[in-house]
Amino acid sequence: MPTIKYTDLGLIDYKEAWDFQERIFNESSEMKIRERKGELPAPEIINHLLFCEHPHVYTLGKSGKDNNLLIDENILKRINASFYRIDRGGDITYHGPGQLVGYPVFDLEQFSMQVKQYIHSLEEAIILSVGEFGIKAERLDGATGVWIDVGKPNVRKICAIGVKAGRNITMHGFALNVNTNLDYFRYINPCGFIDKGVTSIQKETGREISMDEVKNIVREKILKVFA
View 1 (tube, one colour):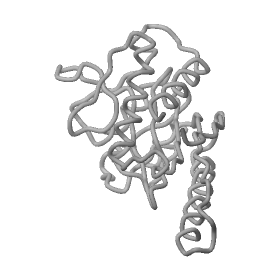
View 2 (cartoon, rainbow, N blue to C red; view 1 turned 180 degrees about the vertical axis):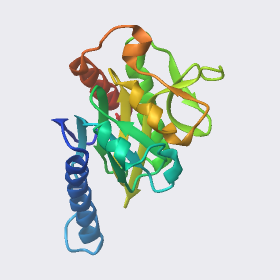
View 3 (tube, rainbow, N blue to C red; view 1 turned 120 degrees about the vertical axis):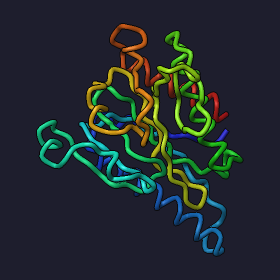
C-alpha cells in the first residue's frame, strides 16, 4: 500500500489550511514534472491525509453560483463567518467547529485510481465510518457526497465532498458533520440544492460525539478502503 502520512491540524483558519495543502500539492506536482523531464529518478511522492476543523466559513466551488449564498457581507460579519471562492469542484458548502474536514493530498497513480474512483472511495470510507454509529448512509445518484434516507422526502446530506486534481494529485476533500451547528446551513443552498436537507452524526444519534473517536474511525476506514 502507498505510504500515507497523517497530520491533525486541529482548529485552523480555512485559508491557512488551504495554503498548507497547496504547498504539498505544488511540491508533489513539481516532483512529477521533473521526473517526467528526466531531471529526477522516479520520486516517491508521499501521500498526506490532513484532518482539521475550521472556524465558521462558506466556500464556493468553481462551478458554483453566487446566489447560493443567501446572505450579504454584513450578515456574514454578524454570524462571525468568512467566505471564499475556491478551486475545487462543486457548489457552496459550510465548514465550522464540530465538523471533521479531511484533505487527502494523494497521488492517484500510486493507488491506480482515476478521479471518479477516488471520489467513490472517499464516499465508501464515510459510509463505513457513520455505520459505526448505527447510521445507514449511501450515495445519491447525480449528487456527490454521503446521504441518509435516499429516495425519501427527507433525504439529507451528512458529508459533503468536493475535490480538485491536477497531474493526478488531489486537493480539498470531505466535510463530515459530527457535532456541527446545522443552523449555519440556513444561510446557503447547500451544494446548490434547495430541496434536500443536512444532518450530523449528533442529530442522527441524539448525543454529542467524541471528535477524536470519529477521527480515529474515519482514518481507519480511509486506510482500509484505499488499501
